[in-house]
Length: 225
Image: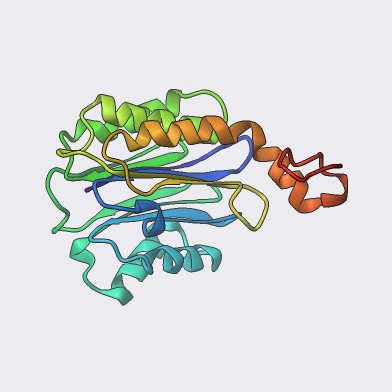
């Protein structure tokens, strides 16, 4: 049903998640990030509450493995859950319960962790980690490279229909939050198209938010500055 990669940029400290699923609106339920704390992907039979639960525990100082273990224990049904997490130090962990669907796999790499279920092949996850580790450019681009590598390696056993990309940095809000909630085909390609359009505007939106009196013209009808 889902494959994802959670990653950290060692140079900037940014944290990010890229994810895709056969289900609708995967970005509404599965990726959870908190600046300066960590990033969590909760998938398979998804319990969205696990995302903020794990982030709260990371913020309290627990290591990722302990945070996931404690969150799963108090929420129950751990056999149905698949989770990955990375903290602000780059420490990662993954968990796949005994009832994880279909072919499934999870792998931690350098500053990243990837996982999936209902996969065409377990090698999909290995390909994601390798693509992230070998990728160049900013974090968002490396995450998307991992998603394309997943598709090239077979992706899910069936078609995927939604995808999402989120990145947090030093600000309290996501600096990148892009979603394709439903596509009949190629949601990852559509997500990349969104990123190509948004990429040159990322810093401008930050600048406008922090210093609107010094922001450039907004380039929309009615803006006469």
